[in-house]
Length: 310
Ligand SMILES: Nc1ncnc2c1ncn2[C@@H]1O[C@H](COP(=O)(O)OP(=O)(O)O)[C@@H](O)[C@H]1O
Ligand SMILES: [Mg+2]
Ligand SMILES: [Zn+2]
Image (tube, rainbow, N blue to C red; front, side):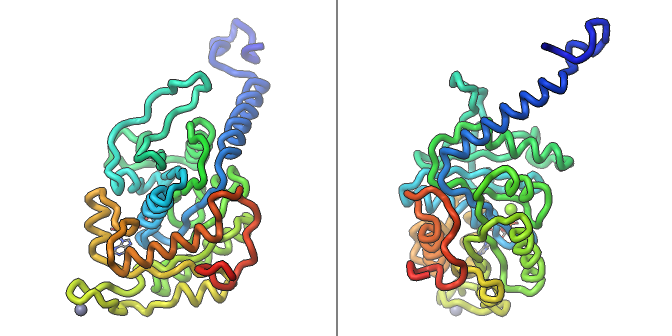
């Protein structure tokens, strides 16, 4: 049956009946479940406010996991600041589906890393984006259901800061998605990040742990860590909320330069305190979400996230 109105109605060709809409929704639901069924761990990288290094952590986490031999997907759903494409210096555009299943291939950064960004839906990179909630929701659902992610060990999702439509859609669409919360040591960030943690509780999203970024500064002269803001705030907060602490990453000028040039730095094997700190954050996440094992409830929160005794 096509169209709920009679053929004399001027919109009969475009108006779809309620049944058609329901069928389409059910089809999308199936596509989403099929996609998610092949992905072991889904990680939403969250922060209370912008500028704390959430995209930096997302991109480098995806790269590091891929480098460690895992199959990884990176999904950038930050419409207001889609930085992933720039940070990875990705070229090219999404192509129409080539396979009979009609799925769209994500961009392939390397053998182990597939990337999709909302940036591909923007005509101009500098265009200001004004999207309403339902559109964002639909875009995110399509990014899951319509993309050929294939079998993945990890899907990393970079969402905008705060607790708006995007993290909510992710929480509602992806069962067993887990959060990595990024914060800086400053108090303001901490006040906001508490909201993120309460959001996770409200939507019953488990938290893998807390990362304290920009924790102290690496002196360019002697490579010693200089405490700029009081560090340790993120760790204290993790303790207060009984959450695992995944580690602290110092501020390193190389991170900024690398991010701007599209050469991610933290996930490289560089012999610097920041790169080493990041490697131990990645290790803590791999321990909490082992790549070979499908996602289930996390082991008890609290304890030490960087050793298996957690
Ligand atoms: N550990 C770090 N040391 C130095 N600069 C950093 C670090 N982490 C992030 N940055 C820089 O801070 C800025 C904001 O980071 P970004 O990842 O875009 O934050 P968010 O996604 O939370 O808005 C970027 O210029 C980035 O290069
Ligand atoms: Mg960002
Ligand atoms: Zn120095």
